[in-house]
Length: 465
Image 1 (cartoon, rainbow, N blue to C red):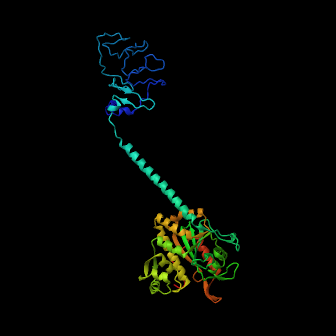
Image 2: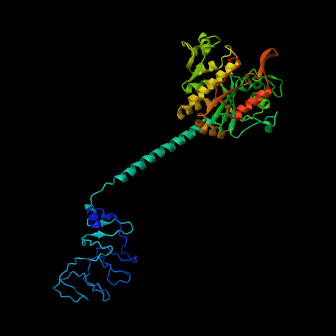
Image 3: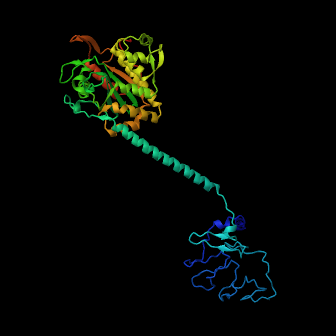
């Protein structure tokens, strides 16, 4: 009865006749009520006779050895081996034997086409008469597939566009590798697989000047500590009186004018016994471009700094134009690129300790702002500034940094200055004011800061205390 209901609902044609009597089949279709022209009662290819279908073949005589032959004959009476009166007509069996797979299919004469080799099954109706049935779940699948394909195409296009753009940016970088440090063996330098040390060198080279022959205005080691998830900024004071290998002792910033970035890196490694993995030489034009591309940065300033900026003392023409019509007060202020550059280079208000502290403050603000900036904006920024960069980082190394940049931007930022507070004395050497550091103590403090977990606190100076 369940199949009759399915048939009436138009669903019966969804099921395949699994006992189809094809020429290659060993089993006869025991359910079909259709008449197969190629079927005969005694065909050797059929090992089983359809005993429940209710079909009779007028041209076929019941087999002598079949005890049921003629039992379901539709004539007026029984025939065959059952010798009953012909007048007996279709006795009703009130307790029929339940035979497996016997569904008493009533629509014996309905047209039926078996499905063979993927052909469609029709049950009682021609295809033209069959109403089209909508299947919402199939439609939903098609829609989802179309959407997924569209997204995939977009991602492939975006990846291709992004990859080619990144390649253009990397190709614009001025790659200048450094040689081996001739003044100290690499085995004497402390290093770690979880810390990458990149020295940022800022120079104020005028147009037409060779940046490698100018004094370095900013020297800051950026240590990316993946084990402790910290970015550590170490400022080296330019007035620190230090031994420059191959030359006499002098201010640290003189090393760059004597032998370029190579000698500056050699000098820091030689004195502090820390391996510097890479360097990046940048100009102040790049500094302002980065900040402007980020839409400016927010920096906390003191009342004394605000008063000094408002006075306009020691401002050149470009700085005066940048701060024109602006009255600042203590607290958080929003700086443009030109304003942030001048603020980080203030040198007559206090000392180099405060100056380097301001530089680290601005760099920290840049890192925080970059962490909340969209990747597309960062790409625009890099496209503008990377041609201004000189570095020994290879394309693969720059790519690796870029892939991890979003993680690094989420790290805590720690700060240190060398010489540290209480580890130096002021003096005069060759008619100039210098800082003479305790090299053993500063080396110990520097190495501990770079390779161990650092305390996160604002940089302090002896002058502030």
